[in-house]
Length: 130
Image 1 (tube, rainbow, N blue to C red):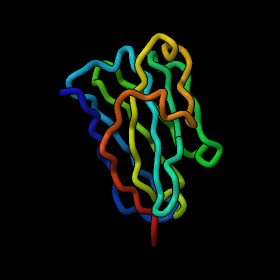
Image 2 (cartoon, rainbow, N blue to C red):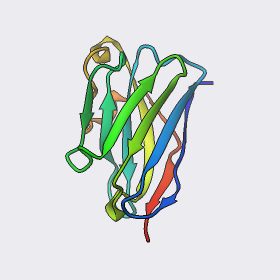
Image 3 (tube, rainbow, N blue to C red):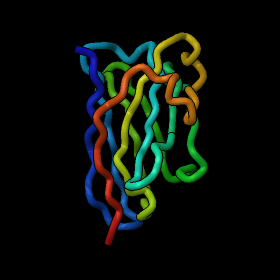
Image 4 (tube, rainbow, N blue to C red):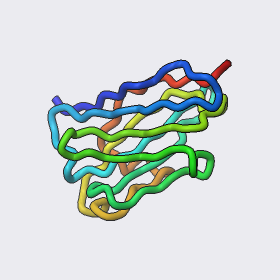
């Protein structure tokens, strides 16, 4: 069974850090670009960051630039999201998603077109609060 499993969500104070992980099960990530999305209560899901299949190129939402870093370890079949300087407005359920195909080998997928993604994880809760 092909699935993505996120982990690492937690309650953290403002200014703190977290690292989320997303592990692929049942398939290799070698030919998949990956992305992180998030959905806050009462809001639509939004793209946070994406990374090309070979890991050389990334894209970030303006709201997280300079604070979040996405990385991909194909050998471990895992993608990570390092989140620093967390703010209360970062509170959300975070989802990872996978996009298959040669279009994404060197270019990260869009953060606004969810149709580009083939698999989604179940989400992990991040709460930033004092």
